[in-house]
Length: 122
Image (cartoon, rainbow, N blue to C red; front, top):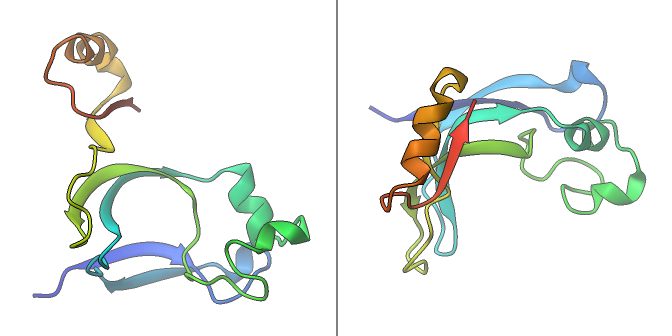
């Protein structure tokens, strides 16, 4: 069975009406890419301004006339699930995620020598 992911995005810039739900096959990373399983994401002011095409120079990275990737969002936290062939060594992006109620437990884990990446409290 093919693995799929869910996201939002679109093929054009504009207001919220152009964003649509997307379900697609999970891609394989290219030689110099990392595949991340997103566990938490957010909507930032930068995401909103990019979608609204403001300011115009900000569209150079995501695409001048239309979004290149077709996916929205830049704020994410997750786990690296696979690496491209050219990546021999990559540091962990996120080691563990704790609910806010376990803040003390998260701090205790950070104090150990087992921590390998970022610890997120959400």
